[in-house]
Image 1 (cartoon, one colour):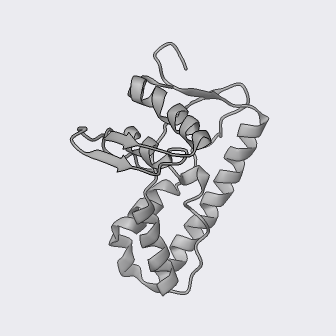
Image 2 (cartoon, rainbow, N blue to C red):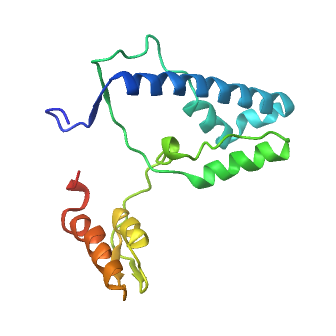
Image 3 (cartoon, rainbow, N blue to C red):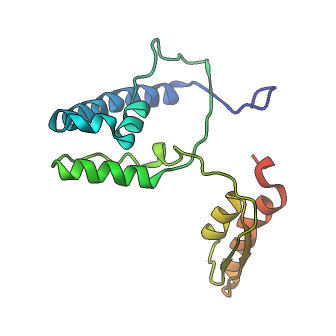
Length: 168
């Protein structure tokens, strides 16, 4: 984090290679989008396609160099969007690569909820469902009978429940 509290990432050789790979992957995706639009030009007005075009834009050049810093922008996933893309492409016989992998898993941040809804998970295991509910601002009631799972559940939920969005 910098002095203003913005999360930053220093560019090293590993990050630089990842940026270069992403640049190539975005070019490939733009080619897929072009082939879809050639088959059906009317899809250029489709919201899912427009979003795909936007997130597939090439990075501006020159690419960042080692030693420089990038601001980190964390965003949440949008599986409904990806399903729309998959459906459109499959209808045209085009195979879309896994755009919903880790690098794209947090594209759209869901809106913070008011806490009026309580989520009950009576067999919570390690707590992934209650954790996500807390992350979205809901009240959570979770239980686990397995003692190991109960310890993991407590560890998963305690700090996020106590500190909320201030936890980094």
